[in-house]
Amino acid sequence: MDFDALTHDDPEVAELILAEHRRQRDTLDLIASENLCPRAVREVMASLLTDKYAEGYPGRRWYGGCEVVDEVERLAIARGKALFGCEHINVQPHSGSQANMAVYFAALEPGDTILSMNLAHGGHLTHGQESNFSGRLYRIVHYGVSPETERIDYDALARQAREVRPAMLVGGASSYPRAIDVARMADIAHDVGARLLIDMAHFAGLVVGGVHPDPVPVADFVTATTHKTLRGPRGGLVICKKEDARHIDHTVFPGIQGGPLMHVIAGKAVSFALAMAEEFRTYQQRVVANCRAMADEMALLGYRLVSGGTDTHLFLVDLRPMHLTGARVQAWLGSAGIVTNKNVIPFDDQPPSDPSGVRLGTPSLTSRGADEADVRQAARWIDRVLRASDPSAEAERLRPEVVDFCRSHPIPE
Ligand SMILES: *Cc1c(COP(=O)(O)O)cnc(C)c1O
Image (cartoon, rainbow, N blue to C red; front, side):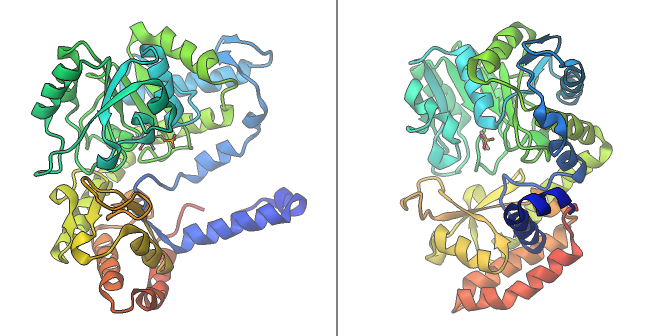
């Protein structure tokens, strides 16, 4: 990594970036929402496009000098439309949360009812958490997973939708290990006159790779982050039909944002192009195959997985049978160099600060070239720590093996 100017002007921040570089280089990242974006995307984000104010949209800006960034955004839009096969895409949302905010503000009035996934069953903050804007502005009713299968029961959801009559049904989650039946969700929403938002923040890359059902043809609105499985810069996007295009655009700007981050939008354009390549399809297939293999190995080692497994890039381990909780497991694995996050599981009786689960995902590891044998090894490493009589000491012993693995599977430099 070279940043001579920064090293000269601010050695303190330069040293912190180098420390983060060493941390990423020498640890296994199993956080399902994280990935390693290619160097080209990082170069674009470090470019002078960050200097340009471009409030508005290509050809209709509030500032002069936008002729080049107009081309950047037009390119991102054209590539986004081709990649997702959609009628309209807005590439300006600064984050996934702002993409969801844009959809709610465009399609709903404050006080309207949103039917969304229970946060404890995998839903996101923006799906109605009480201190989030969504929970404060709308009437939130949650659906969850069935206690028996730990999967969404679509018949129960259809009955609930008929009772609740929401203005909007939201599908998509942050810690649900199963594919979402987007076609069924569309039937359920449209039967009760609700609009359907599919929040594919987590699984946008899987959709592009053809390993998750595609919500774009069936949903009224689709939102995504660009930094999770899509492996682009940190940001968000909204996809909708032609008839909602003006409304969505007007809600993003001037409704909820000012100047777009043109350096990030350029990064989105680059990552969309990379996502159109055949290698990206193969990558997504490998993410899912690796996740299945890792989940399978954990199950063979005796762990209980929520819903019994996974169809996606992530799975959830129920730690209750081991008499463990998420916070300790995250800390122990962290000292071995295996980075995870503690997570609530459905019907958890532990508090969110120390829940009964840990969430594991394969996007980042797969970006480093890990294969099924590697992820099975990672599962055995996790088991070695968790079953040790002294997990902290075992984590210390394991640490050099993890570093060896990391060195042979480098991050993009
Ligand atoms: C990650 C995520 C988001 C939003 O992400 P930001 O951190 O705001 O970019 C939205 N919805 C779901 C389901 C997510 O997992």
